[in-house]
Image (cartoon, rainbow, N blue to C red):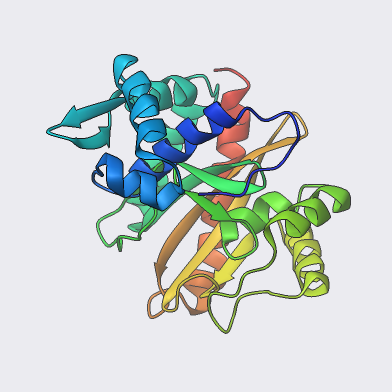
Length: 254
């Protein structure tokens, strides 16, 4: 459950959202478990679950509550309203087949990267990321590629809110080092993840900028044992920047 702030929040809505987020993390949960986890009375939790069930946002299977497929409908609606989604999907499918690796696209929301699409080539390794997952920006190539096109004030605001959590010995955890990295990314046009989030996994990403605005980034990911030398330092950056340019051009006619 994330920490919320602001004097104008509505407690009842917050409780309902906390229930939804809890159920998102679990296959299912009963009233007592939810009440204990959230520090609320069973009566309060039951009332909120009954309302969510009535509106088809949860299902009740013998006292075990789960998120309903209504959330899938909402997610698809949001995704399809992103004007470049079809362009992204087509280009990433081609990119994954060409390089044989895992290709992903993410956008930024509330200071975090949100994965919108992923597709695999024949040699691709599977990662823990799923569509809709949110990730901190500083530790992944997708996030750094997007941050490089944000104002200094915006980047500072994101760091103030989310911090610079350390995942591996390679993670950037110092603000000044992050800004130096972002300057390099702006100059070269692409970003690397050198095992900064997951040991043994490397990525390279390029920002997608349309009409002067950063709308997301795309990346190719793979094992460190394969992502090295000319392939990692030059071939993949060339491929991802090319795909980002294709998305930019095609999105203007979609």
